[in-house]
Amino acid sequence: MSTPAEYFWSLPPVSKTFGVACFMTTAAYYLNLYDAESIALFYGLVFKRLQVWRLITNFFFLGPFSFPFAVRLIMIAKYGVSLERGPFDKRTADFVWMLIFGALSLLVMAVVPYLWSPFMGISLVFMIVYVWSREFPDARINIYGLVSLKGFYLPWAMLGLDLIFGNPLKPDILGMVAGHLYYFLTVLHPLAGGKFKFNTPLLVHKIVAYWGEGTQINAPVQSNPSAGIIFKGRSNRLGGNQTTTRSTSQETSGINASSPQQQNQGDGIAFRGRSYRLNK
Image 1 (cartoon, rainbow, N blue to C red):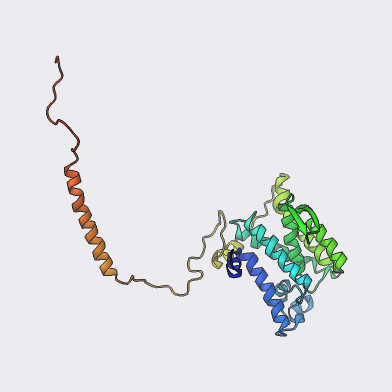
Image 2: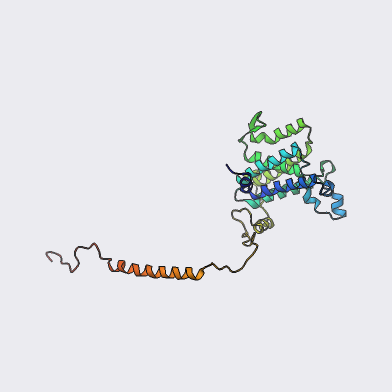
């Protein structure tokens, strides 16, 4: 049985990074290290005061420590990891692009005042759940050990639970819209014979390659060989001269040892000499 540390390091990089970022953001808020309004999405402050970080930071706040927060974090750990290890296996850049596309779609929808929300992280998590439900429609899931249903109906079941618990439904619905838009452009439209190909931009491939984590099949760029390396320089093996001398002597002895074998290549031959055909 693996330890919690082994389980953590075994998680795929993108889901692990997103989950840790959400947890650390809430932990810092719990310790009163910042005010939640300083990272919320307010377009007036983004355009008038150039507080562009709000376009990113609002996705990492899933609310204060509570039962709904734990459920959202479990969704990342279960369904995000399942996607990254399943349909997006060896497609790290494509998975990153899915999250970026979802975030951009949610930001566009948030321009409409009725659809605006100060924190869009819950919608992004629900987008992950929706894409998982389309990729694993026949998977059997249990909700709190009470209801068993197919994976295709998971988003609707979670929507019903939020309705029962009194949680807002608008973030869930926006996440479903963003997830369906991504799934339509990447899966449904190509299957229908559409000529438009919704490919991952080259910039995303370069970012993932520079990051040095994960893999990408048929990546247009090569991974950064210096990613994660603190010191680069010439390396010398301790006792290198002794190793070289030892290997040289072994090679020399190997050459000498092979000489008798070359000399005795004729061993096993009963008669050696000139041959004559009878009745010639």
